Length: 174
Image (cartoon, rainbow, N blue to C red; front, side):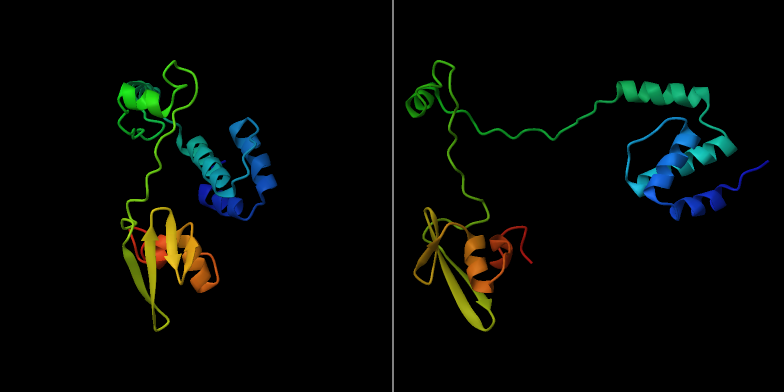
């Protein structure tokens, strides 16, 4: 008896996740803990098609295994590291690190999207020109110092929003 894969796949889309997990166990021959409906439908559909039309040839399986063994896989992006301070700077700033015990304290780096301290950020908002002064440790708006641009934007709009986007700075600008 020839199966109609298209009809069965259409029926899969109407099933609940529990029913799909049961069907997966029937078709694949092993249980799954997956609860992602789209993933289950794809895996069951692939298996149904493989049963009707034939699975990968042994030659194709060997070639896939060869390619997988030779592949240089990166599981995480490369780490960008700050240049290490000289030994004298390092020891003076962190005396316990010199002997290999303790943690190194890295200097806080301001976001590269924010202008340097002393700059004024201006934005036209609801017909009013808003001005924020960039300080060494925060932002001054209408005589009050805020820790972040997002805090200033929240004060202005009344709701949470990204300060860089609100003031149209950097790649987050809208």
